[in-house]
Length: 434
Image 1 (cartoon, helix red, strand yellow):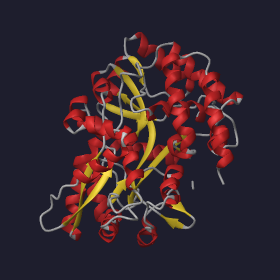
Image 2: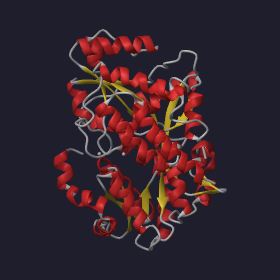
Image 3: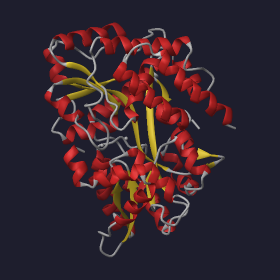
């Protein structure tokens, strides 16, 4: 084998109900049932459940195109909160009320729904399109020889930065760790917060942990993800202390008030206004910046964070999430037809034109210059690609880790106290893994 909308939008779209669903999974399931509305006259309309609120127009654009092309389309059913969304899928997965299509995560998180029997086998659709998709992407959705999802997106994790702020500070994208530290110092001196950091929604707290560890010791990162190293090992502590040093120099936003992702989000505004210079995030966030009025290549650019260890190989974090057909859904055959369209050249062209994303399909080019440039840098530079922390290791560990990383971001201090708590869960989890 080899997750967010302004606060007002959150409330307008039923955020209170979604938040309640986190506590009451049954309410989450009811929400999924209520919000699937037929909007395509003369076509079968499926429910596509997701936790990506700001993607709703994109999902529905693609759904309308699918309806026109195949007679089967879809309408987005969104949750502003990842935890309540996961609860809804886990509650409905074994029943006919499971959404027809739903977004999920790869590797360990996907293994959970495959083992539970929630996901339909879509191997035949992959076989039909095999020449146009990476085997590596397929492998992240494949278990025991069967493939259970289509790539909803593919994204590299990089630093998105305000080009005007960099110009005023007389900075270019740093190529070494020393240059990166100089940039942090100069931006701070100019009254700009260098880096955006968030704990909103819990999941973002892992972002800088994975970056500083991977850029210090890629092998250690890989071994830690596989349970072959410990969170209390010296190399992990050292990476956390790099993070600690930057926090103590006040290089990050207040993680409790800065929000980013595919739902509640003020990061785009802070970056556009030049209050924050840089955000480490997946390239899937670029369309959100464009939606805020920033022009790619003019107002913002991207670069890969330099390695802390200059002797380490060039590395980049990679993320791909699947679009899944509900195995027990009442419209399974239609959902398989819709997924087949989504993976086609026509379907991917519509999706990329709507989102500005990079398509995982090799005959559909990206519409965004920064993405094309980043992809070229990775290919020409021989960058080694590592799966994102959220998916790369068992989620029982991740759930404990993101809370400990959040405490570290808020309280600081010796990182070993937080790492010991994570390792306690890791010991328990790995002892139970086959």
